[in-house]
Length: 271
Image (cartoon, rainbow, N blue to C red; front, side, top):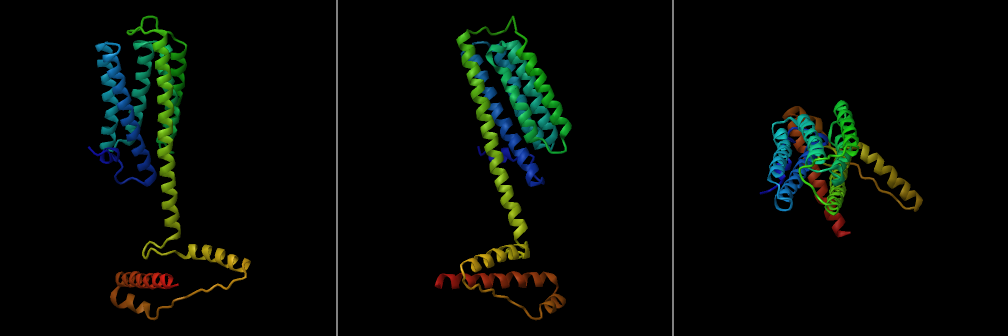
């Protein structure tokens, strides 16, 4: 099964920035589903508590439902759903399954970071409310000790769980930040290309010509070397547009560029 179609759910007809956020939300939801599923197996085979395993399976399915929200185009709803499910799950893990000694409530750290990374700029209310909820619930779990947990574990096991939570926290943050850095670099490359390239012919536009020209002139002057500029003037081009239409004129321009690029490469190969 290929992951790309799954990760691309809900990205159709969106801008590059919005599609990146939705794709990252899909990755986060899928990763959280896997982690929650592993915890479910842990409750079955290590703690042998099928009630907790069954309850945790419902949360695992709830995380997976985030992908369904995006598949139906409810991108804002998917993020609200995901973070709400996550916070409810953490409260139950800390105050029902076990105690705060397990460190499950440390996952609340991911909510403010994830909210500000994944929500759109205009969705300020959602980011602030979810972040405040995460802070309040974190301090509630931190300062409330569950005296009758469903699963009683040793201090050593609590320490192992605490360390696993910290490790997963760091890995998730690293993964999400890597995805965003790569997408930002791709976005910058795309924007730079759009700003410096003519959309019809694919060659450098007027802005790029003058920017590069100034650099080349300064470089030639600093090294006291000659600089050659070749200018093409195509006669009667307006007549082509008038007789055959602008579509024919555009086609003519693209073919001229192809011929020039071909001969330019031939000249560079010979030199």
